[in-house]
Image (cartoon, rainbow, N blue to C red; front, side, top):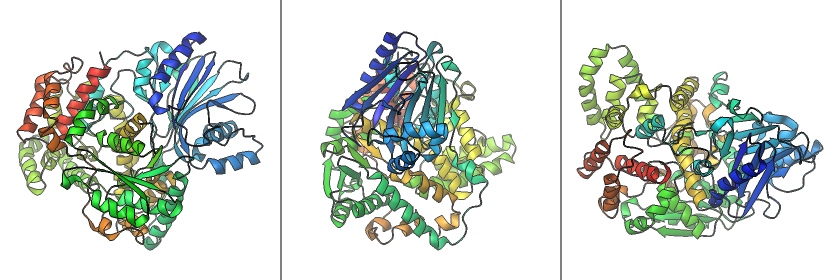
Length: 638
């Protein structure tokens, strides 16, 4: 696991080296063990290394035999041993035992098609040097894994091309202005995070998941991302597996056992984030069957209703793990809030929980941890699998009604929605009814932090200012892809391509790497995802129990008390803390609103969200998201 960066199109080698060193220095937390550089005419690459596999021999950049290709790599390739055997049979000679070297030889043999053979989480850059180690770089190939588990950002300042694993590293280059993107702020307000492929910094984009780029060093600004994997498109021409639903759990079990086995490959100690839920319990059960000395750790709270300690403790005892607990309360949160906020590479309404559980893992002496992320998206664990189809039906009815009728009856729809389901359900139903075309799919309403009407009241610029933004185009693209899928698989694809990548994976990477911790996500092993999304709803939801397929696949090893309890989300006690030890800090932040945000979110509008929370008129997540945005902006922007 590493951080990577590079500059392309610069003539002066000293300038290139200086830029790469500045970006590397900004990512030292991602790789405290070593640094690697490739400085050549027309391109320079850099990396920071966190040693996980082949500790003595895994330094980078790694070359092919003829020194015409060199790679810097962030991530893990879980099938690298199989790839190595195949490549050695083709005549390739390996100098290390690292997974990195398997990629450079695979690219040498198969070019960009090598991506279809890689199983893992990754971003990498391969420099093509036809004249060898001392020649100039002709092209640079960039790629990001299928789900966007690992990030890669880029910018094109003055016709040059720069890339890095973090936005902060690109800003450290000095080539990009610290200027906020107004269109990205709209995405943040609506969803609590900026949508792919935008960032909050004007001019910096992310390489989308499942995409690659080939950059010609003589015309780097002309490069554009290209998709290499699209499960929704691939499955649209295939019928769902409606056959024997009874066979699906057995097939899934085999895939999960293989995924966990692959994700346990490491030359350092490995552990599991253990809560009281099905996902982390499943990983603990599967991993403990394959590896002795497994570590588990749990974040616990003085507020008993939020603590998952007791069930997690019994799970750890059942599977014989070395278990540790970290207690954190409001005072500890207060003391470490500045460093936790500083860990955000991009702000998010979530993420602080991952910061503290990652800290706990490092305190336990671990470099690698398994996380249950991805299970809810793949196996239907979220309420969105129920609410999104409901909102879609309401939006479909609304499209058949005159606009005047929709506007007149929207309050009644909202009142009915709130009566049937508390919270924001009514507002979201009213939005689906009054403006069914606001988003390209009604699913996105179910994921809004501020429903459209509230978001428009908060933002100073209306939808016309961001309707052509790249994050909107991304929503349109993934909605078109999802339309080719049926039932729960459609919602899964939308979850994987929006909420998962924009919040969960981005926050997990930033917060874990701040502690030099590698987090692996076995439920996002692509054979597992491809199998699950190929199934019909009848095979996945043959009982009313949430995540029925996953439970059926692991029925003999999951404790009944874990399976039978109501679903709990891993959430810190923010409601209590924001009214207690964090109240003055957050109030002070709202009173000192960032000048860069004022033209986009006026101070008076933001302050109203805070006072509404104190008056118990809105949920904690809204003022908290604005607090994080404000603190990030004051640190990072002009």
